[in-house]
Every structure is written in structure tokens, then in C-alpha cells.
Length: 338
Image (cartoon, rainbow, N blue to C red; front, top):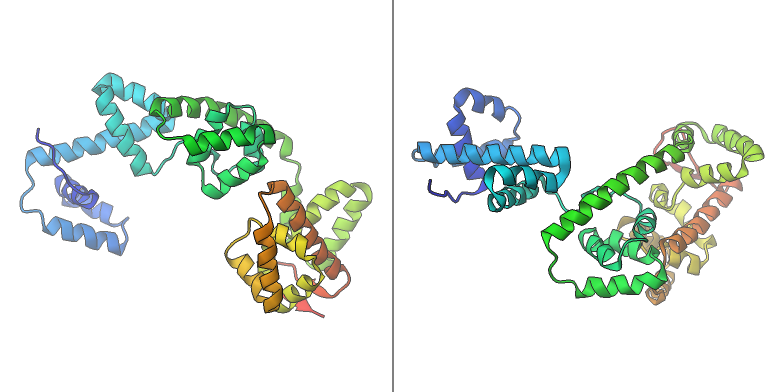
């Protein structure tokens, strides 16, 4: 059978023609206008769909569906093993690679939502080469934070191996991924079973009540569980929540915050929050802050979070003094300056 080289939309158009009008009409109901226009155009360009061509496209779809099913059941290596027995290793590799691209999957994708400090702790016992490989697949910002939280005696070795890395075999990556996935899932289950203590639920509830009720509850909690009350206070308003404040409130806060603390707090902050902070500072002060940040070397995530905590402490102090008021009860963080 001759190999047909077609784009994705061209294959989809031919598949719809091969399946007939009734099935195709049902599929069109689930597509957006742009997709329908594109497929309609491609269908109109098909002079005649040969039986051999339609069989090839249907066969390719079947193989992709099989691969995705095996990947979802047992991972990439499992899919390779099963398809390899049926179709041969070379063909299995080709199908798996195409399936991964279709699913937009990347190795170690299961780690992408994990906290960087947790990942650093999780990976800390692994060989530096293994850590380097994993970091190369993570989002650059997350990889940077993980690297900063790895022990100093290992950090340099990991960085050296990461910089010198060229080609890594898919077999090695698959082996490492399968091994770590199992450990990771076990640790996450264990961690979740320990971490569930109602704090997040309480914070969510307090976000929906008025300020006076919130203060009464947290103060009462603080009388018997001061550490827990402090954890709740930290979660009620985070550094990212600065974006919810209006300009006058933010300007009042920035007048009280130490520049060095603010520079450290903004070390890993980009985009909207940093722009908002610079906008609400005098031009000279903003320039000095940028200069202060530029002088900072690599920082651990914990150091950044500690500095952000100092900024939030100022927010809480001003609110306690009645100089700013952050409304509660689901009003979107509206701020009133008294």
C-alpha cells in the first residue's frame, strides 16, 4: 500500500468522506465554526477518494486510538511493548511518537503541577544525571525553582550535567519516568492523606464571609491554635492577591514595605503584578527597586516566600489599623481606603 503524505486537516477531511454523510454530520455538531470551515474546504478539494487511501487513513486512526488507550492504561513503555508484539518495534515506535504528539504529552508530565520545593525534596535522592534529565523537560521557571531548592552539594553537579546534555535515549527516559511515576504517585497519596486537615476548606469558607466574621473566627482559633491561625491568615491573602487591590491601597502598602524585602519578594514575579507595583511607585523609587532586584543573586524559593510574607504582614497590619479595608463576602477583593 502506497504511503499517503497528508496534513492533519486533509486526513480528517478524507476520514469524514470515508465514514459517510450520516456519521460526518454527527461529528460536525461537535466542531467549532473555524474547524467546520477548514474541513469543508478540504473536503471540497478531494477529487476522488480511492479505496486504498481511505483504508490507510482509517487504519492510521485505529492505530492512534489503540496507542492512546494503551498509554492511558499502562504508560508509554506498556504501549510500546503491546504494539511491538503486534506490529514490530519500529512501527510501534512510530505510532507511539505520533500519538504522543497528538496528545501533546511530554515525559514527566505528571510532575508539572507539583510544587517546586516538593519536587526538589522528592528528587533530592536521585542521581544528578537523572535530575538533570527531568529538569530539561520541565517548564523553565519551575525547573529554575527546583534547582534552587536542591541541596548545594548537588546543585552544581546537576547544573553541569544539564548544560552538557546532548542526546538521551528514549529508553532511558521511559525507564526513569516509569520508575519515578510509581514513587511519585505513592508519595502524593501519602502526602495528601497527611495534608488533609481542613485548612483549605476553612480558608475557602472565610473568603465568602464578611471581614468582621472572618476576624472573629481567626482570632478565636488563635487563642487555642496560634500556629494554625497563622497558617490560615497566610492563605487568606497571598502576594498574588496584591493584584486585587486598587492603586491607593497598593501605594499605601508600598510606602511601608522595606525596599530590600520588596526586591526579594519580586525576585520570581513577572507580568501583571510587577507592572502594577512599578506603576504605583514614584519613578525614581521604581528604578531603585529594579536596580536592587538586578543585584540579587540566585535565591531559594523559601527565601522569596519569606520576603513575600513580610510584605503581606504589612498588608495585614494596615488592615488591622483600619488604614485599608479589604472587603470580603465574594466582592472580588474591592478595597476601601479610610
